[in-house]
Length: 359
Image 1 (cartoon, rainbow, N blue to C red):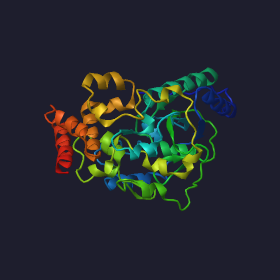
Image 2 (cartoon, rainbow, N blue to C red):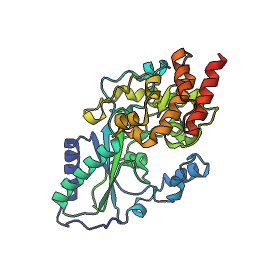
Image 3 (cartoon, one colour):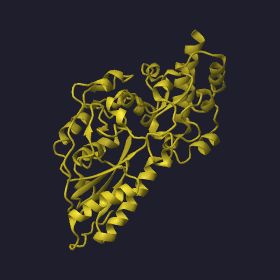
């Protein structure tokens, strides 16, 4: 359990807040903001989202109770949240819209083409905490990067990093949405920034483009329909009625971001860890399906994709192969895994083979 300490009372909170933003930029963050812990406006909406079962099999979201909407319950003594943005859109990656049209190649969400963001973000946030301690003395804090019950988008909005779009992701007028968020919960009484304001207007491009219509209303996503949930969070069988809608998306889905007008202003990342590795932006599905477990481990170690495991990786690719144009190569690749040791893989391979053999 984190022991929350009081910082040296001699420090100047306004000077420290300004320094935190300067240090953050030097560490590779593209925007730093500070907010209080009051999420009372967001709590009813979040509780209603859970009550409707939109979290699907992510039971942990309900088990956390109000810790997600009440930061001081998660880390006692928390007074402020330092919210950080780091851009991830990789340079020189194959165009996303073009890749989605190439059904024989794998589409992997842009955020997962490089190294695991959890490690990169967490390390930089810890470095920022060290700089803060150098000025303020020992202080209570805890670092998060999509790793605990944290309502990161709403906190970032309150911290002035942008606004929550209709697809529920954070949007920035000068950076679109291709970025990661991270947080430092702290007991330091820092001055807070002005909250972001919405600029979606009447646009609903993200709602219209969603392949599975998972954005069931503005600002509401039914995770059970979301391709990111289906390919990453869902551990069992993917509902058959949703498989044809997944196309060649084998890890995550970026359609709502690709359609968003604000991403015209998105910035390419300067962080080399987020650049494309192993040619994952332009690789045939059959190539990935031929990987053995050792290939998966070797090529994806240090990647966010590694977290889903080899079995789920094959499951996702089998669905994409079922959606690809019929060819001898694709049928042969599927037949090669028709007797896979995994029942989950066998089921999805059989579904894909049935589609091609009927043609």
